[in-house]
Image (cartoon, rainbow over all chains, first blue to last red; front, side, top):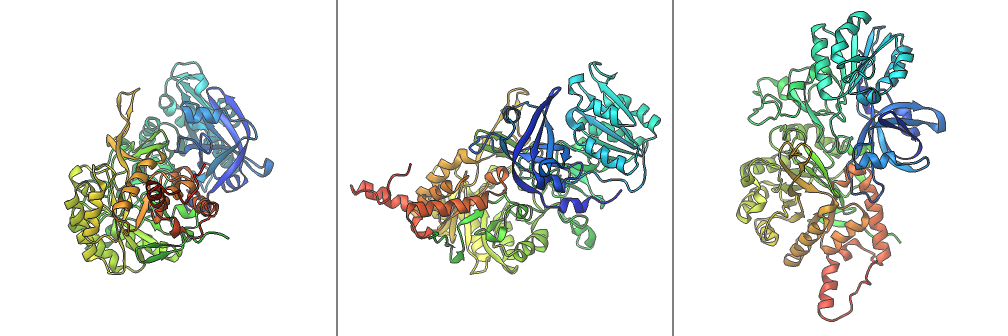
Length: 312
Length: 324
């Protein structure tokens, strides 16, 4: 896998972008915005943070959405997918072409791409599949076979099943109510898909329980997983410290890292899924945690692996 | 002619009064991708503690009307990493660094003050004695005049003479003036008003508190009137003590409001989450506000509403025309 560090350094931009289109896609909405500066720097897996409610809004927190598509028309457009669940996303769904929205991006670290030609399985839960399609494009361009495994509660909540069928070497759909594809969860179909497609690497995006189950399953086969997490964020740019989760570094130390700037893509095996939502007792700086003895200098540098992990 | 925005942080001259609020801009690095940190009056860092700290569990935030609750719990890298990495970065970028410090005992604050005094380039120290996100409410020193004074005394005694010490106070007290007096008597060169208010939100669908830490600090425009009131009261009681005002500032007009109440500087906080370019915009808007008001110098506006109010009380016409 190539390191993704350089991409995170590409400066994100804050853009007042005119809406190009808002379309309803089954249970979701897809909004395309003209934002050349964001489109230029984009790599699959990165996201945008959108201000909602207009200039005098009482909703202060930005909403973070994966970038689903980038196009060159109008100088560069980005499309993201969201579910209109609360007042903020409903406001967004009500925007019309030529309305201007305040959008920052591209944010976060992208999916790392394989150096060699390997068999890639892309797993999406709900509209978590949105960032997988630009990734699939990049993988195919490198000659990697791409298989899709998409799951959701019902048929209208599976995002992109047609595209997956059209563009993937294989596409497996699971729904909990059996309204599309196989009845069950993605994990129920995982073993079969891995065997049939001889998967070398898994890319996954979706709810935490799904990512946790996929990582646990892939561990049995020693298949690396790159998981894009959906933690709730306030700023998306690394300053608010609300989107943290426990991740073990290459040095064996668990830190509470920000999913917006250290993620949203993590090595699945590095995330302590069972401890998400808690501060593990052995995490750096947990209550009762003591600094290591000064006799052990590499341990004494909490950020030896990654200078950005604990900034701020 | 553009208004003269220079102001004074204690005895330190600042090119303008717009600062970042502690905890809303990290140590400046992330924000620098959206704002030129050297152009700000100063960057006030997230509160630094002696040891690395993991903070509180998630969920750590909840959106509320015109505000938010946070319960980060002072997550941070500790003073060693800060001095090694974050402070030098701020200085090489040409930013002025106001370092916020937090501890659980007066001794910890003293140690932090010593370490910062030994490091070159600290513009001022803001003593966070009012973070609501700690397990033990007894360690919210800013809720008790004697406890607040004991911390400030230690910090002042251990800080190099030429570094101003500002005490950051909590609005969650009956008499903020008493706390302010006590801090100034203990040696504070100035005061930062206000920290967040302790709040709580319950998810009616799950019927459980939204925040894993149960309670959190309320910030954002929802608390601005409380900031204005606190600044006003303290400025009236202690007219010569410089105040960094903060609390829900979203526009240049809001910053101007805090300055008219008595703030010599204004920190921009929660709105940065909404608009990472907010500091630049607010600085620009504040210049426009001053120009529109016919004031040539920012320093002329500090506490001006108090004089106008006095004039009204004395039966004279207010000097300023009423604003829309």
